[in-house]
Length: 457
Image 1 (cartoon, rainbow, N blue to C red):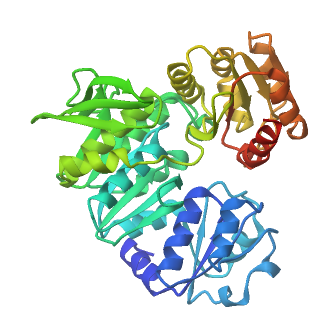
Image 2: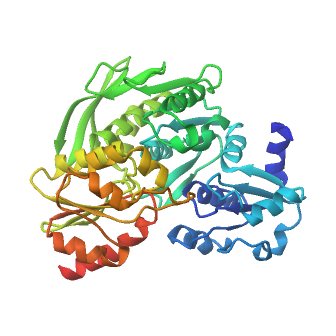
Image 3: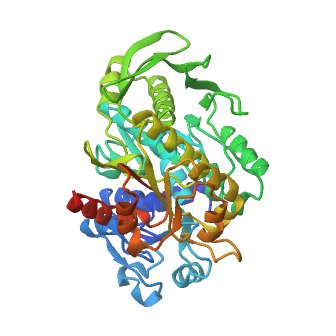
């Protein structure tokens, strides 16, 4: 089916069925189609807070991969479009049924590409920083009353959603490099925040990953604008912090727990911006979001008001407890460079405090590929508690485990634990600052940890 025919199909289909509906990107699409008046349902292997919010929207979800569980309304291939995530197991029974019975079956990224191709689109790519940058950008444009739809890879604290819906003239998209998904997009304005080696189970080498980002940079529409973090090997307008970039945060200081800075552009310098998310990686994300919003046509004074009102993204340096005696922060960090960035933010905000980190490694392949780097990043913390590796879509790799990783950590205060003892071990560490990190299901432990710590105090 041609691209034009596929786009027409999305419009004409009354039913949208999702395989892997609980994923952060998939659930945003499900919300979008529900808001468009489509009948939406789906499957996911695990019930989570995300799937519960979808069920609260009257979206029917089941949790066992069985054709018998598919609602009757979705068995007609003439009125049902099937959307799946590449993280879905290849032996999915439901996916096989739809493919074998004449249904239109599209990847999430293909659907995003089709939705956004008819709009003016802004895309955020990078191995780190995508979600925060996309969320800041979506908030800036929404504040400036741009008629936009923003698909976020996390839950924005401002909107309590991974979808910002304020019209359909402009699209803001998180451009995911996993499975080369971002190559389905053709943005008008884009940025690349980082290109550190990751997803080597897909790419095989960091050189292949870099080539994919180069391919993405060539996907811009004619006359489009690309912003690139200073130092990356791709041509575009550069951005950075207190450097010679085309767009840079200058005169950076911390006042009352927030960054204060000026924004230098090729034309002029705009003064007195305020941003409350800790960490220079987040300040970098804010800088490129501002640059993209300026390119979109937003007024600098409106952007100052918008940025100071940005509350953050759930699981991105999210404060759960913040008192004189105890600080508990949760973050999605699942790559060594992301852990380093969180550590930098912590040392900036709490320079004299010991930190207990609870880390759940995500994927056997990523743990194997970056074992030494993970060990170096984690060794910086005072106390390290390791949960078992979260497998996601993978089968175990012989010899690769959290115990294997723990042996490489040089810090003597280290331990492999199970989920049942996590609260007990956090309390035993007696540190003022507690950090939970990882991209698996560790997020499901945050509420009980928070409750347990608060009950103790």
